[in-house]
Length: 156
Image 1: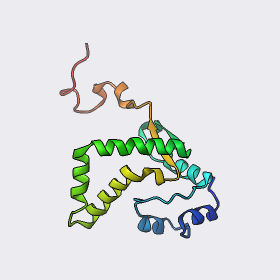
Image 2: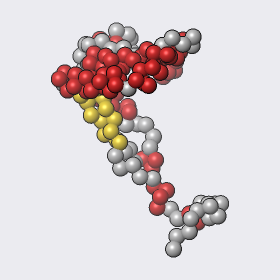
Image 3: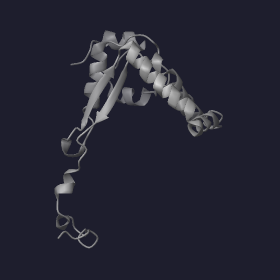
Image 4: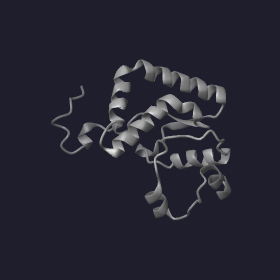
C-alpha cells in the first residue's frame, strides 16, 4: 500500500512521479540528512519496495529493522562515530579521497565521512538483516552440473 503523495512531497520537498524513467534518471544518492520525521507509511513503502529485490530461489533471506527511537539512533551513531575515530586507516582513506581531483570520488567520500560522523541526524534507520543464507545448489549433486564432475571432489 503506497502512502499518499503528500507524505512523499512533504518529506522530500519534491513532487512525486509515476514515470519510471524519470525516477531512474533523476535519482540521487542521499549523503546528508535532515532531522525531520519521516512518515511511517513512507518507511513501510521503502521496505516493501526493498523486499521486491531478487533472491536465489525467491528465498528472501532478510528482515528489516526500523530504528526511529531517538535514543537508540543516537547510541548507534555514537558507536559508529567511535569506530570511525579509532580506525585511522579508514579516516586517512576518506580524508585523502576528499581531496581527490575526481568530483565523484570527492562527493562519495565526503558522504562517507558524514555517514560516520553525523548519523544521528537521520530521522530513521532502516537496517537490513540477512538470515537463512543457504544456496539451493548445495543440495544438487555435482553430476547434475555439466563439466563439474572432473573438478568436484568425489563423495564417498
